[in-house]
Length: 380
Image (cartoon, rainbow, N blue to C red; front, side, top):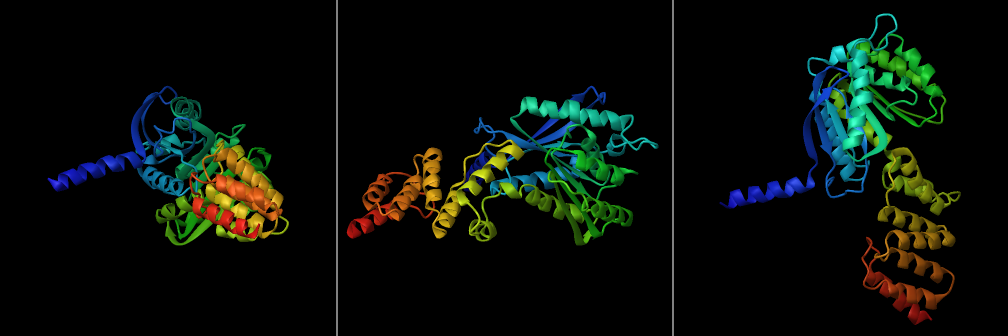
């Protein structure tokens, strides 16, 4: 009986914190057939009713969906990327027809052209209409379907913002076309390419050739990443490429790291407050996400500002913290630190004490603020 009760409790608890996977059948007019979809919604999607999420589109979802969805869930749990809606298209038995291209133009034809329109004109609009989506889409494909993703770069504007190409089986002329097309795209673009030393020889050689050409592209909007994994086969490189791609594409989204703190924030030329504001504006502009500044980022920037005696930045940080976290001690701490630096101890004491009864922020606690106030009282 105890085992049954424990299992039931575990199932209920796990269900409230894990991502939801929905299985749907989509009746496509473009394909004139029904396609099976897998859709993973973020944790607490149903309760965060005002939140919007980027889309990660997964082709070859028969075997790629789970590794992509698992990595998205893991990275977003630790805030290394935003939570996202993962949409997988099942292609067992149809992938080669779906990616069919003309023997002369090497562009989608027949079923390939229909599949191209299915994704852009039916599937993505359907996801946008039925789920809360942000205007940022990443596509993931492997060999034949990785090549197919590249066709969306020739739309104006491109359908996808990010492309994860895992050992692409490139159509003829694709290399030349990408090199010509990418510099013409004004929008911000993220492009990840991967192969392995034990990859299929022809695919490895063409991927390395494409990498050499993409490396030469000069464009402020083109963000390019490449991996050639040691001892990775055509299939094992997928498991290594997916997390690398997500980590690199969403690097700006991550909380401020130790390296970022020491190499950027402690640089004497960095105006730390503006750096923080700009970081979150970039997140908003790139991913369509207007998120509150993380408490850890407040603390990192506040610590750097104090170390560099940027006390005006500390004051601005305090006002921003009070606005975003009014029930938190963060704003009181930094405003108190600012007045303390100016020698206005009485005002600093009053502000520190005003933090009593508010929520703690990491190591910045009510007790710390009261101790600071007592120390200043003894000095005053």
